[in-house]
Amino acid sequence: MESLERYRRSCTPRGPEERQVIARAVRTFYVSLTRFKSAQHGSPEEALGCLTSCEMLLKVQYQGRKIYIKLDDVSHSGLLEQAKEKFSIHNQTGLYIVDETGTEVDEEIFCDLVGEKSEIIWTIVDCCHSGNGSLLQSSCTSPSPSSDTHTVSLKRRHTGDSVMSPRMDDHSSQAKELVQSLLQTKPGGEKILREYSETQEITDKVRRKLVNIVVAAMIEKYGSAPPMDARTRYALGIVTMFPCLKDPYSEKGYEHFFDAESNEGYIAWKLKNMQRELSSGSRRSSSSRDPSSNRGPEFERDVTTEHQLEGDQCREAISLLKHSTDEEQIHMKMKQTFQHRQKIVHDPKKSCTVLKVFPRFLDTKGLVLQDFQLLFGEEISTKLLEKWGTLKPKIIKESKNLTKTPVLNSLIRSAEENQDEDDDLPAWDSEMAALLLLVCLLPPPPSGKKRVVKIKVQEAMKHVVRFHKSCRSLQEITGSDEMRHPYILAVGMARNNIHDFYIVVDGQLIPCKAKSSLSAFDELFKAHYVLGISYDQALHNMYTFVQTTIYNVDVGLCHESPRVKELRAKILN
Image (cartoon, rainbow, N blue to C red; front, top):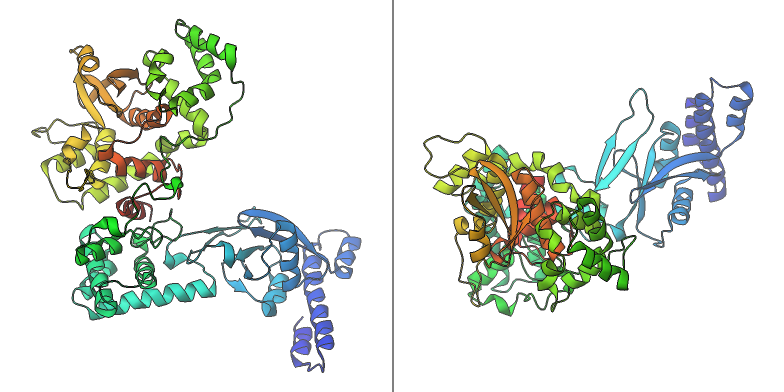
């Protein structure tokens, strides 16, 4: 091996054809020797076959799909050509190969690595499909003694662990240097860098200072209307400099600081405030946004469900449902009339009649859960219960950075199950307290024509859950409450001792199958989609966070405020 390598390096062939012949011979020897080593425990005929064949099977993946590719002539260009054909890649440029560490492999060293690492999974990366400025992280698992399997996954993650194409890497590095240089020279900047170095976190207070410094610098350099590319560059620089601020669910990760398409984000908002202009001049109104940004509970979805009844059969089933008391039959007929019910839900003239047409919602538990699962599938339906154990401590931790109030302190103590017996405020159980902390983290936005009306956080919590002492009649609720947006009615002897949950809609009670606060909130969220009811304006940010970050519904397709994206970045990073 060493002598052949010395020969290859010492040769000075006179033409390209001679160089190709020598390179091919070396590649063939590397591949054959590798295969010979792996076949040493086989028969002599198998070993001899390895030395006489230059074919090789390579494990290759592209955008998560893995296949074997057989190369007659092992080469960098040969692998790319075969990959284009096998994966149906139409792009002719911008493709490159990375190894299991995420390191780009060029043509010069590819053949050497193939000989040394025959079991590697080669990953094909397409610059044109990775998104402008998107980051690719290579996460690898080394083979254990009992397995020779290598797994390479490419994900968008924070900059410190990312693998990017050279062009993207340069762009991000330059943006990072821009922000770093700014903070090192502007008053207050060094303090931000020092605090981040110590804690690896950016609090809301520090984030506001950071945005103030950036916006002031832009105005100083460009005037009162900095160009869009400058705003984008600073936004990219911020999340590259401080990876904990990067939103892993958005396309580029920095849209909550500045989104060029909608002219929204912390940088845009600060600029508008400093310019003292009305937001209507530059921010797109909700009516002018892309229709996809309005996705949520009221968005009608294409759903195909088996064994659906139509025409007379559907009408007969609906008639039967109004009188049936057989729970198994009720669930079956409700399932068979699901698509008809969805048409009613999304018909503006009929949507208010759905509980009259299907009154079994009001006395049969589990129907909301069944409809939601038919709408989105089992995997999405279980997201909250699966993720909550991981999310809950992070939500509590973020809540401790908020301005302290008696209500907030009481919720944190309840969430941590550390309630003071002398606490004047009635305490919810741990799960409900942690859920209500989301309302504190994503408080009600201003509303009204001039966006000056804003309800208090404590009042907004009543739009999520209300306590009803079990000794009182439920008719008090059904007779007086006409609130359209759903909320939980928790019935029990105390807030931390609930034995029944209901979803209240239009003064009517839908009994919950849930026996815990977390499961009740799960049904509350799902009721919005099953009945096609929009989010309460005071809870819009909170519900949007739950929708995209927890249930992963319409990620990247619905409008999210910068607050929602920032909280997601803090909790998931």
